[in-house]
Length: 368
Ligand SMILES: *Cc1c(COP(=O)(O)O)cnc(C)c1O
Image (cartoon, rainbow, N blue to C red; front, side, top):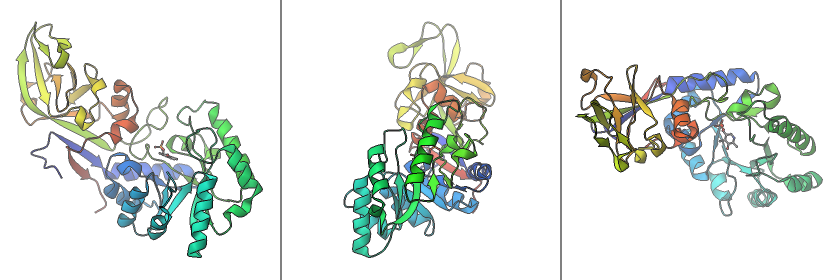
């Protein structure tokens, strides 16, 4: 853990906001179960504190991407139901069983392998079946769905988990892929012998109850990302990133700042150098585009983003608030994760999962 005094930035993670977000999503579901997706170290926010917080808020079902993430989560939550989205890789079945992890089976081949494993263990172990309804990424393609529908005995000896699919365009409520995938999923569900079903990610929850089925799998909205970018964000912000000022200097025309001399000062200005760079997940595309805030005052990024440093124009900020050690909001009330992502030309998911390892991390609002 990086100490606060020595760190170049403080990342505050509000666990009370996280819990409130999850509960508000659960309340929207009116009966369907609400899982928590905690892959990629809980979207960069820390698997253990996030998982403990969600469990304390009432979350019982979790999704991770990798087997190793499932093993790590099992150590944190001995009783949770844990599903592994990336499914069964050859040679890993015993590790799934040893950790009571549920593989999301993505092909007939892995269904056959899991069934064979269940037979050797003489026990029906649970698995989900993921069908592809339009992502063309993971899941049984239509031909394999047809084979499984014709040969349902291929699931004999396997305890049925959820029938799953994933939406490609849920964050665009008017997109024709949404009703198309829904219809395909309903039709597949009619033909396969699994009764419980799960389709919606965060954005899918907002498409309406027709998309909810038995279990929803929200990730980004739990972490404060806007699930439906064309609408105001209903979620509470969970992260705040405050960069630390290392040095402040006066500059004047015709000076330039940073690599490539991409910003030339038009007149007298003050520049604050902050101990955060692209190695910390402050994307290089924010050079001459992003900004920090000191209180309510905007301080634009001037010049390129370096590996370990950025430079902000703090001419408008009172000197007393800009000293070595002062903190500047790089993600905060005036520049949330969606705003920063928009400026950087990416999505909030990438901002969160890219958050650096060199920050001092402060967890607030936790249950314990
Ligand atoms: C990552 C993921 C989710 C969560 O998606 P969000 O958009 O973050 O809510 C749900 N289901 C699957 C299959 C995923 O890969």
